[in-house]
Image 1 (cartoon, rainbow, N blue to C red):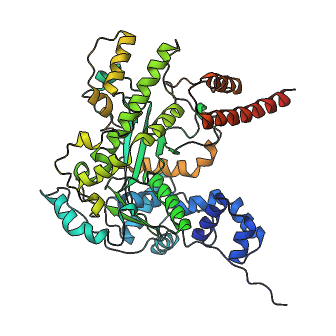
Image 2 (image 1 turned 30 degrees about the horizontal axis):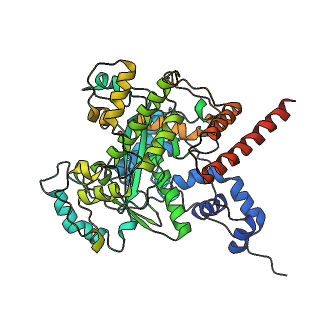
Image 3 (image 1 turned 135 degrees about the vertical axis):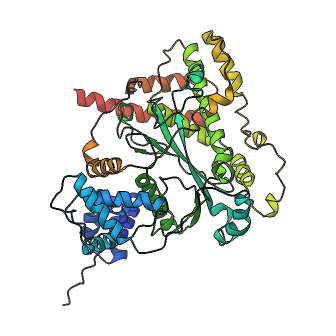
Length: 510
């Protein structure tokens, strides 16, 4: 009887198996398709956290995941990604010298990097030789028109408007109230120092506005008190000490998106700007990453043409509306928690219309030439292009702010545009120093130690909602008579679920 040949999966193959398991496919089905035993698939699932880290670090050719002898590897890889993202040419000798520099900073006096060490490092992390084409810092007049006319048609060939996406980050002071706007006016925020309650939001949508990606939100803490008992969030949440986008987070998000597209047999073209946190991610199977020319974000970036402004307008409306409701119900108007901000920004994203997104792409010059989009919009004012088309959303932000001022007897004049865009220039990323790279590599090595940390910002006051409070809220909603039959059935279903949780808690207490 011939013995069955043992199959060895690459990191990329293992990552795809994990993705399939996370999306509900059975162990037996995957094992049968791959020609391996159930225990092999179970072992991959058991080691999923380690495999995900290797996949995100682009260690795709490895068959086995051994431990690095030195932390120099992590620091050097992080540094390389920062340089590559900024079009800095890197050669073998430069890598060799930089590895020795990091070893010296770490106090590893016995470490001496050789050319063979660099070759193994490059093979391990799939770094191949190639020429990096640097771009001039200044942009001549007309570069955006030149790029759209001559380069863009070739770049987007083979992709439909539904398959062309743009993604961009924005900072958000989620606790900034209208009366505090003047305090921030004219001040420069470096790293979020002027407000401890800030997050970074990555917004992405396709050219027609028919697909809005779930928002990516970056906060400071991995686990805050407000996340206690929360099973899932309406956004993808990441964290670092400055609430910034980093090259590691960006690559992680891209690889996750790429795996999702691969499973569905889809492909996209993704437009991003040349910020330091956007590295050139290799080995993407279904995402074609295209970088916009430098220094033209305000002209060519569709998200910056009004999508982000529309998102922030909707967020500020929800924020002010919540403040008014708290005053009318005689409730304490304490600061919002990160969870409050996440729920609000997610709801605000739902309110940004498909028409707004499509108009902003066209305003940036990315025009769908199909008959349905043939109308010339060059003369349409941008304010009208991002106007909400939601019939239920008919109360302007200015009117809500005026009502809030009447309720709080605030007499100062508030500029609505400043209230909406006060955080538009907040830093969302930065070039990293060698010390920051070392700290970043160190935090990556110890990220599992933070799983149970219970962080809370000094400005954030939060008390978790109890089961009793949730049940009472549903009971109050059931007495509200402006619901249709489907709404009533949904409330009943929610109440039954909450009652089961409540009863389970009572049994545990007994």
